[in-house]
Length: 617
Image 1 (cartoon, helix red, strand yellow):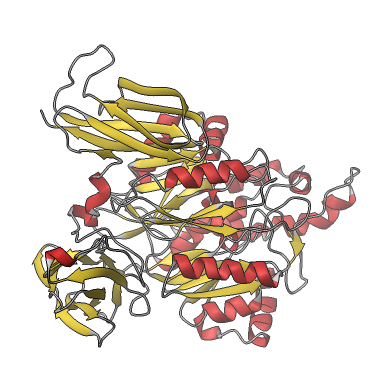
Image 2 (cartoon, helix red, strand yellow):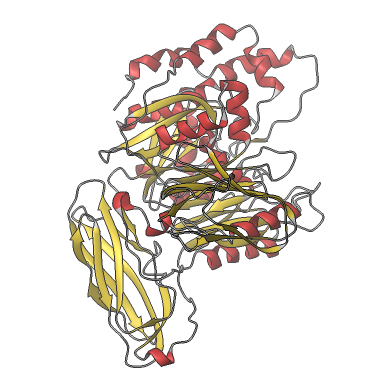
């Protein structure tokens, strides 16, 4: 594990906030008219830097290129953490949230965050006194605020802030990417400064990236737009294969699903149009029919809903309508913050559409406390998510469970996984269930080895609906369950004592599921090896399925574990609706391929989706 001594960054403090020191002199010499910056902060202290680097910033550094280069040189690439590595998902247990002062966020949000999280605030020494005074005057709980007093450039903590992983020895680490805004060198140092302050190992790499263009599901699957490939090629000279390898080496990402841009212009961050809400639930932006991204969004939402997530069940795709803010720019309701059992949603001042957005989150995330915040600074391409960054619990109690969805007969086995990254003993493990809307009852979950637990929900006396959730506690006092919103949220399934009385079954009242399931090594959901092809494993032939909203170009190919092309199954225009493509287990020369694991790659609707397939001769 690596960490940088604080002293190696001490010289950065001597220049203070160079941008603010130089701004007055540099801007007065600028002959060309400059575009307005994004907004003023809520306290009227400074005009905030916009999302993308502006001509002003280049002008500020003119004549100070040596200092810019020196600040940029304070980062150096490190070896990756010890494998196996697991990148934390946004919905996993947080202890805090990282923001920056001067603020691009409303104070009522800060007052709500401090109810259950530490508010980590990046602030320069020159703004520290004002920050303390204004936080106090605005009623922020100062006992829940922790200051990181360092030079900084902008409010976009999501983009330049730390990414969290657990290494092969269960240690929390910070991955520090190269922020894709080279004129903001102070921001680029914040992950290292934060790691030093918190005593967390930090691992830097040189590849350009940005946090707003990254989503991960906590099970080695992540998504970004093609911005990551394009910037890595232009700034780092890296191929797509090299990018994928770096994401595996530093983040443990086995399937990196990189998507085409959803529209021709804009910032091209994935969080401006879609968001993972959990391992299998995705929220996708919806817009009016004449918007340039309308067809692309519908196509992508349809395709995603036909492909399996890490649970083995297809992605549960929800839509949120993002109305026209003016000049054809959609509201950015997808740009929300998930923080334990709360969801913080940006609002844009239209009572009807704001209420609809809150309702969309409530439908997608039953049992969560969904809260909305109106702020004039929220933009079409960014909002609340871009200006906040969750801080993971280094001793989190991680609970996973593949829920029961299908109709069940008799006793129902329940399997779950619980792992304390702090090494604390599990002191309570239980299923909490009710039948026919009656009183909640508990049934034990018993350890069966490693971090796996099993229990039973008994059969009912009549045909009914069974509601349930799983709940764990450890010796540190941490409590977690599934669904993560329990006890306010739960799973439901049709339940019968008599096989002849079972219907098709449905899902109600909870987050959903696809039948009893356990968790495998490394806390993997069993669906991590399930595919949108059936049967699998297969002896000789299998059929791959995917859906499209409109006829579109698609490509389906099979590769061996070394990345060599085995078979091109389809290349051309796929039909609207269900597409079924059979692989007969042969290569492009008509020869039977030997038993083993192969990888298919689907490219359609601007999405690249790769999963393994197994042949057993």
